[in-house]
Length: 354
Ligand SMILES: *Cc1c(COP(=O)(O)O)cnc(C)c1O
Image (cartoon, rainbow, N blue to C red; front, side):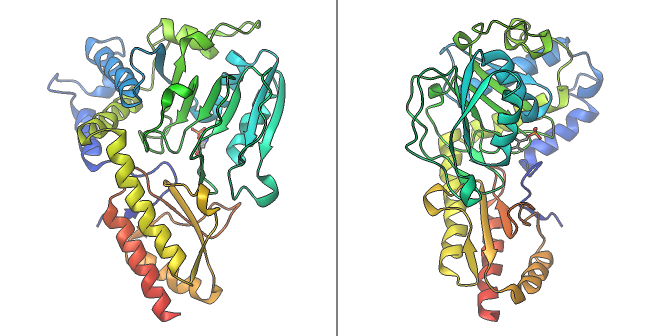
């Protein structure tokens, strides 16, 4: 029996995407060859890459607005340094909302002055800082839209003339945003889009070319743009699966439609967490993520019972991150409402046992 997959990442992908992807491993669209044994320069793969890049822009409403979508390698972790390599000339601002932002800050410091403009560290990142000052002399401001580990999410983004760079690894394509407010969006997209290693960058071209340093080709966004995201051999399988996932999302009605579904899933679990005295939410209410719900069990003696019940029901991947503890239910785009229903039923049953 297939489990209810609440894993934080890599994570659940749509069933039909996995079906098509496994068929393509055997044979791609009747061409007599496997997807993973053809040249990335073949017309078949070039078409896949073009489609993936254009779907990414289309789903974000960024077509014809001066943006380019790139499929790169090295995950979000490579983007921590690549963004700074390409954009940080003198000074950049970072909002510290947890482990992933801290890692981005550490890499950026190798390239210039980094100002931590706001932080929620003093409260173990339970909330999203708001209303902070953004000095205007910065090359960019870096944000992490969804903080996978703590279950917090920016609902509104700072209004500023400073270019915005955003790590959207764990909420890419999960909700409707004005994506044109960002100058660069990146994602280690094994969380809502593709297999492990998938790396998407969406960059506004006019933000590039402003740093004085020399940039090695593989690190240079402009180089990747000039080679249509095929400077070297791309992650063929990851790009294909991403293309299928984006097509699945488009057929469903796009980001606005999935947002509504994601909201309903999140409301279901958060109302249970709020009403059920056995559980308490971890993240501040107004900043709760629709992707990752973090919560504690209030009575330690019920923990083993809850864990057994989850196991019995085929619920997988709800242990909290080691730095936060408790539980974390990740509800990415492909997770069916039914899975959230199963978890919530167990939670309410536990209350009766408590
Ligand atoms: C998972 C995650 C990362 C790390 O992604 P990698 O692709 O493993 O480097 C970075 N940022 C956020 C917000 C994440 O959730």
